[in-house]
Image (cartoon, rainbow, N blue to C red; front, side, top):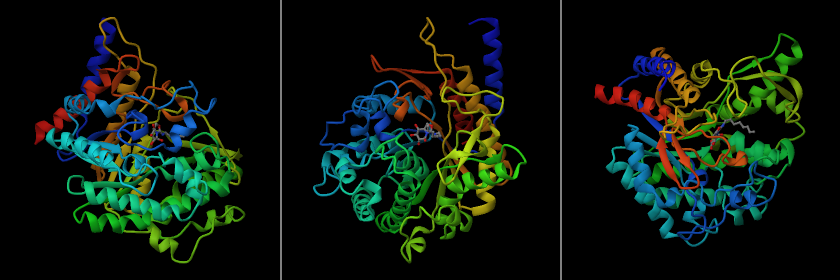
Length: 463
Ligand code: LGS
């Protein structure tokens, strides 16, 4: 390594050592079933919307799919051993509905339940706490074909049935349950636009209808999980952004309010206050879904935690995207990741403050935070991912700052454990702490992973 690189590394190591987190802080990594498992036709798994969507030419930037992905399905031992090497105390993964119920409903597939039980056993043996997400976007295909998936109100009952079966069987070993990952993303990008599965492109009305049904499914599932797993910690994961207007112009200020209402308050107000925000009901007045009496009471179940996925801030001006939200993203000068997202570590602190001040959840987790940058494998096989290392440590610093300020942040999960299938972007962006060679499936811990292990090691030293 050159003298310049040695200095750079020393500075990052100093930063890693200076991050002071409480000794019981949960430090983990996150993944999702479709992005890593592969083995789409094995173990009795049925097809999902993402299997279908990725096989339609033109949908995925590099023409790939998750058929094999990281082949995690066949590599549980190796992958859990790597998590241990990273010093993780928790692992956030998602359960693929169609491994449990291949047709979405009907016969239960024991092999699917056994797969997640084996993963859980391996994690527990390694001293890693499992955090299971019940829905990370891979809806069973037959349920999509019946009434356009989340546009059909009765999909709520199918979801609750799946949750009942899964938590009854796995609840003895898994105590942390998340009902949904990111309602905003899959409803707006998959139902409103055509970017993600199912690629419906039905505009705001479709996005809001899917959102309402998914919120209702969340609300109805919570008591079922409580009954099946009385000592469970139950939460939901939302993707939230601190939002600021791009200028003092009234049009930009109003666009920022609408965008913030669309991405943040629509979901937070429903879940924590049992009402949709009045200003957004007005903005959405021509595209509202059917909301039945009692729906919002049912959505607003008491939760043990809120998980926040945070990647960036949003600086917003007036525009035409997501009509009738009508905004445009302003891109301030600065560093950007491979995804074109601004690096702004303070966003992590700001979003925690915002949520804590306005909604006071009992506990908070950062359930995803991370960055894609191109990686180079050096001649000696190492990956010196400076930008990702710095992104991770500067965001962790902000997590430590939030805890010092009294925010009940209990854990941080890096996105992601290993490079994987990044939805519509395919395998182009690499977010992992571990590099994956998709030709050979060889895994290599990157420099960022080693630095993360340093932070984790410090915590373990405190035990
Ligand atoms: O891989 C996903 C990560 C990467 O960046 C993960 O499965 C999701 O839960 C999460 O959405 N992830 C993510 N989000 C950053 C913000 C998404 C903005 C959507 C823009 C689409 C063009």
